Every structure is written in C-alpha cells, then in structure tokens.
Image (cartoon, rainbow, N blue to C red; front, side):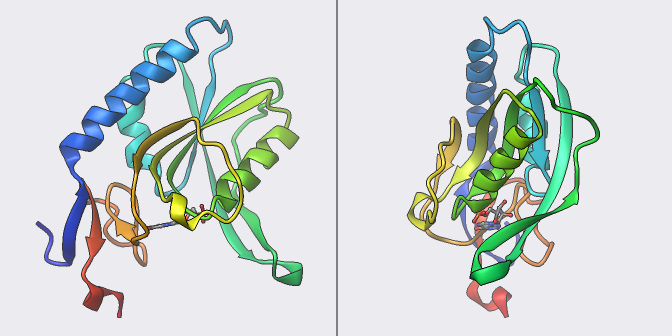
Length: 179
Ligand code: IMP
C-alpha cells in the first residue's frame, strides 16, 4: 500500500465489480430509448471511473468532458466557473453526467442546471462515491457506486493537491500528509 494511505475504503476489486453492475444497469435502463445518452464526465476526478464504467455499457456512445471550479460568488453564495466547456451542442440530448464524488451536492446541482440550460432533454447522474452526510443542497443521484462516511478520500481519480489520482483504490490519507 502507498505509504501516505491510512486505510483503504473501497478496493480495486470492489470498484471493478460495482462499475460492471452500474454499466449493466445503465445499459438496461436505456434499452428502450432510441436515442442513447451522451456521457459527460467532470474533469479530472471522474476519468478513471468513466474509463471503468463505459467498458460495461453495451450500446454505442459518445463521451465529452467539462471542467468546473467552485468559488465564492456574490453574497457568499458558491457558484461554479467553467474551466473547460463541452466540445459540441447538446441540444435535445439525453445526458449521463459522470462524477467521482457527490459531497455538498453543489457541483452536480449547478452542472445539471447548466446542461439543461444548454438544451439537454434530461440529465441522469452517476457517481462513484456519495458522501450524504455532507449534503448542503438536494440532488438526486441516479446511480451510486458506494456510499462513504464523512472522510476526505483520495485515489481512483480523487486528489489531494492534485496528487494520488493514480491509486487504484479509494482510501484515506494519513493525517500528517495534510500538512
Ligand atoms: P460538491 O460540489 O461539494 O458535491 O463537491 C464535488 C467535488 O469536490 C468533487 O468532484 C471533488 O472534486 C471534490 N471532493 C469532495 N469530497 C472530496 C474528497 O473526499 N476527496 C477528494 N475530492 C473531494
């Protein structure tokens, strides 16, 4: 195990198994839809999960990426800023939004609103991790990999100061590594 990791919360095997289940479920759910969804992944954290998930989606699909950052806007309300926008129009498209983790829920809520404003017909959310105890705004997540406790996690795309995204599991950092 990596020397900075205190414990593993979700193993590589568990992630693979769950991604397969979610992929099958999503495939099934869009079985009757003539128009298949466009998968939009939020950079950078959701990239490993997207790669694992789409191996198990059994219809032809397109992927696109967005990068957003949240910041304190006016009146201390958090807002999001688009760092990288989509490559093409999504007018009339069904979207599957792929996230690494839903924490306060603000990112998913704002991005969903943004995608609907861009003309998407519907947005479903798939997230590898869910930290429901941290939620500040109501969001519906259609597909959840794992519900985790209120701990800051790293690995499988998730970072601390841009590091640890390459770990093949989701784990908790040792306290001294936050300094
Ligand atoms: P939300 O808008 O608060 O739901 O936050 C979502 C984003 O915060 C995620 O896409 C992550 O980039 C980041 N984030 C939230 N919790 C963690 C964590 O435990 N580890 C790493 N990144 C996190």
